[in-house]
Length: 470
Image (cartoon, rainbow, N blue to C red; front, side):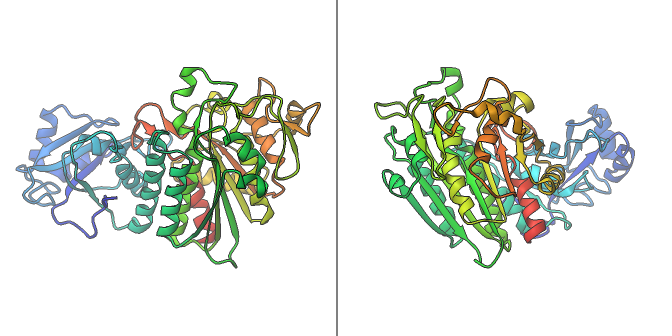
C-alpha cells in the first residue's frame, strides 16, 4: 500500500490545529490575528467535528507565513474535538481525510492521543476500489516525533488487509482465494504454510470442517501457518473462514444472507493480527489456523440431526446447519490445543445474539483467564478497540445436551452467544483461551471506520501480545 506517513519531517506540511472550547483562545493566538479573524467571520465554533480551512495568504504564528505550509494555498486547518476525557472519541481525527484536499499535513498541537489520532487519520484514508474506479487521492501525515512510525504502519497494513479481504465478494474470495491471501502473507514474512484440502480433511481427521464445506463447488480446507522461533512461547490464532454462508439446509432469509461475504471476518482478523505480530518481530512462536469453507446447499449438504465425531472424539448432533462456524472452529481448536500453546485466541463472526447484546461496534469476548480478560480490557481502552467480556456461564451447558450424542451444536433461544462459546470451550483444554464473537463490519461510516468490512479486536490483542512478548 502507498505509505500514508511521510518518511521525514516535511517543511511544507499544512498544520492541523485541534481545538476545544477550553483551548480555542490559545489556538487563536497561535494562528495569528488574520487567521483568527477569518475563523470568526466564517462562524467557526470549537465543537467536535467542526472544521475550517484557512488560506495560506494569512499570516500568523502557526499558519503559512511562519509555518509550515510553504507555497500551499491552504494555510492551516482548525478541527474541533471533545474537551472531556470521559466523552472523547480518540478516532474523531479519522474524519479529516474525507474533508481535506490533497497535501501533506502535520499536527500543530497535541490532540488527546497523538498516536491514536494519527492511526485514525490513516484508517480514515481507506477506500475499497477494486471494482469501482475512484479519483486518486494523495493525503499524507507528517507524524509527530512521539509516534513510532514503523509499528503504526504495520497496524494500518493489518487493518487494511482485513478490510480488503472482508469487502471482497464471495465470487472472488472463496476458500481457494482465502488460501492464496494467506500464502501471500506467509511468503512476505518467510513463514511456513500448508493446507489440507477436500477429502484429505477426512484422512487427516478434520471431519467437521469437511462436513460443513463438502457441498460447495470450492473444496473446504484447513490453512496452517507457522512462524517464529520454536523456543519462544506458543501463541495460536484461529479464524473462522466461512467465505459465504447460505445457512445450509436451514437456509437464511435473503435479508440475513445479504452480507454473508463477511462471514470469513474472523479469518481476516487472524491474518491481520498475524501480520502485525510478524512485521514487528514479536518474540513468540506463532501459529495461525484457518478452516476455510463455503456453507452451500447441494445433495451432499450436511443435514439437521446428522451426527459427526469431531477431531477431539466428541460426537456432535447437528441441531441447525446455520450454526456451522462453531463446527469448523471445533476441529481447528482441537488441533490448536494439541500443541499446548501459552495462548489460543479465536475470532469469529459467530452469533447474532452478541450483536443484540452489544451492537455492531463492540465485540464480545469469552475467557476463563481473569488476568487475560483484565489485560484485554485495558488494551481495548488504550487502543480504542472496544471489547466487552461476557461470561462462560456453565449452567447454560445443559442447553447443549443431546439425547443421542455428546453435544448438540445449538442451545436454546436465549443466551446464544454464551452457549456458542460454551460449545467451543468443550474442544479446548488450555486455561488461557479467548474467543472473540465479532461483527467485522461497520454498518454506517464513523470516524476512522468507513462503511464496510472492519478489523475488530486485533489491535487490542496485538497491544497485549506486544507488552508480553515485545
